[in-house]
Image (cartoon, rainbow, N blue to C red; front, side, top):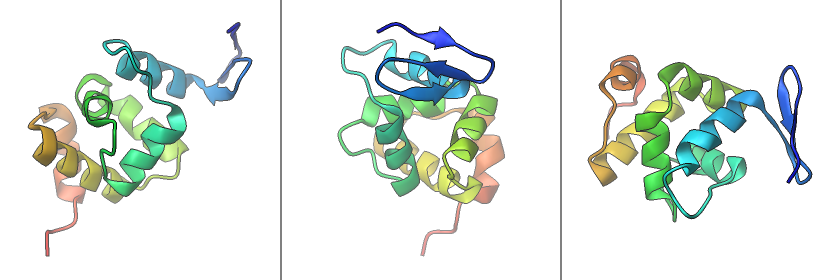
Length: 113
Protein backbone atom coordinates (compact mmCIF):
# COMPACT_ATOMS: atom_id res chain seq x y z
CA UNK A 1 0.00 0.00 0.00
CA UNK A 2 1.30 3.44 -0.87
CA UNK A 3 0.98 5.96 1.93
CA UNK A 4 1.26 9.71 1.90
CA UNK A 5 1.95 11.58 5.11
CA UNK A 6 0.23 14.92 5.48
CA UNK A 7 0.43 17.29 8.40
CA UNK A 8 -2.13 15.35 10.48
CA UNK A 9 -2.98 12.17 8.58
CA UNK A 10 -1.41 9.20 6.90
CA UNK A 11 -3.52 8.38 3.88
CA UNK A 12 -3.38 4.82 2.59
CA UNK A 13 -5.15 3.16 -0.29
CA UNK A 14 -7.52 1.37 2.10
CA UNK A 15 -8.15 3.98 4.78
CA UNK A 16 -7.11 7.34 6.18
CA UNK A 17 -5.99 7.49 9.79
CA UNK A 18 -4.28 10.01 11.99
CA UNK A 19 -0.56 10.23 12.58
CA UNK A 20 -1.22 9.15 16.17
CA UNK A 21 -3.06 6.07 14.89
CA UNK A 22 -0.10 5.30 12.64
CA UNK A 23 2.40 5.54 15.49
CA UNK A 24 0.20 3.45 17.79
CA UNK A 25 -0.33 0.73 15.19
CA UNK A 26 3.35 0.65 14.27
CA UNK A 27 4.22 0.02 17.91
CA UNK A 28 1.39 -2.38 18.69
CA UNK A 29 1.75 -4.50 15.54
CA UNK A 30 5.55 -4.54 15.20
CA UNK A 31 6.29 -7.63 17.30
CA UNK A 32 3.47 -9.79 15.92
CA UNK A 33 2.60 -11.55 12.67
CA UNK A 34 -1.08 -10.58 12.86
CA UNK A 35 -2.02 -6.88 12.70
CA UNK A 36 -4.81 -5.28 14.68
CA UNK A 37 -6.72 -2.44 13.02
CA UNK A 38 -7.51 0.93 14.53
CA UNK A 39 -11.19 -0.07 14.73
CA UNK A 40 -10.47 -3.35 16.53
CA UNK A 41 -8.07 -1.71 18.99
CA UNK A 42 -10.57 1.05 19.68
CA UNK A 43 -13.34 -1.48 20.29
CA UNK A 44 -11.21 -3.57 22.67
CA UNK A 45 -10.32 -0.50 24.70
CA UNK A 46 -13.81 1.02 24.66
CA UNK A 47 -15.37 -2.25 25.84
CA UNK A 48 -12.46 -3.16 28.17
CA UNK A 49 -12.34 -6.60 26.54
CA UNK A 50 -9.30 -8.23 25.01
CA UNK A 51 -11.32 -10.37 22.58
CA UNK A 52 -8.86 -12.06 20.19
CA UNK A 53 -6.21 -9.38 20.74
CA UNK A 54 -4.72 -9.80 24.25
CA UNK A 55 -1.08 -9.26 23.27
CA UNK A 56 -1.88 -6.26 21.08
CA UNK A 57 -3.98 -4.56 23.75
CA UNK A 58 -1.33 -5.31 26.39
CA UNK A 59 1.31 -3.87 24.06
CA UNK A 60 -0.82 -0.74 23.62
CA UNK A 61 -0.77 -0.16 27.36
CA UNK A 62 2.86 -1.18 27.99
CA UNK A 63 4.87 -0.13 24.93
CA UNK A 64 3.05 2.92 23.58
CA UNK A 65 4.13 6.20 25.17
CA UNK A 66 1.52 7.38 27.71
CA UNK A 67 0.88 10.66 25.88
CA UNK A 68 0.05 8.67 22.72
CA UNK A 69 -2.24 6.35 24.71
CA UNK A 70 -4.19 9.40 25.87
CA UNK A 71 -4.19 11.00 22.41
CA UNK A 72 -5.43 7.78 20.78
CA UNK A 73 -8.20 7.41 23.35
CA UNK A 74 -9.28 11.03 23.03
CA UNK A 75 -9.29 10.89 19.23
CA UNK A 76 -11.54 7.83 19.34
CA UNK A 77 -14.02 9.08 21.93
CA UNK A 78 -12.74 6.92 24.78
CA UNK A 79 -13.00 8.69 28.12
CA UNK A 80 -10.19 8.58 30.64
CA UNK A 81 -12.33 6.49 32.98
CA UNK A 82 -13.01 3.93 30.22
CA UNK A 83 -9.32 3.93 29.38
CA UNK A 84 -8.49 3.26 33.03
CA UNK A 85 -11.03 0.44 33.18
CA UNK A 86 -9.53 -1.14 30.05
CA UNK A 87 -6.02 -0.80 31.46
CA UNK A 88 -7.00 -2.48 34.73
CA UNK A 89 -8.83 -5.29 32.88
CA UNK A 90 -5.78 -5.84 30.67
CA UNK A 91 -3.45 -5.86 33.65
CA UNK A 92 -5.66 -8.39 35.47
CA UNK A 93 -5.89 -10.66 32.42
CA UNK A 94 -2.27 -10.54 31.28
CA UNK A 95 -0.20 -9.46 34.27
CA UNK A 96 1.40 -6.78 32.09
CA UNK A 97 1.60 -3.26 33.48
CA UNK A 98 3.07 0.18 32.86
CA UNK A 99 3.94 2.07 36.06
CA UNK A 100 4.13 5.44 34.27
CA UNK A 101 0.71 5.07 32.67
CA UNK A 102 -0.75 3.43 35.75
CA UNK A 103 0.13 6.35 37.98
CA UNK A 104 -2.03 8.56 35.75
CA UNK A 105 -4.88 6.07 35.32
CA UNK A 106 -5.42 4.32 38.65
CA UNK A 107 -7.18 7.27 40.22
CA UNK A 108 -9.55 7.39 37.24
CA UNK A 109 -10.68 3.74 37.32
CA UNK A 110 -14.12 3.12 38.75
CA UNK A 111 -14.21 1.18 42.01
CA UNK A 112 -15.12 -2.50 41.62
CA UNK A 113 -18.64 -3.24 42.80
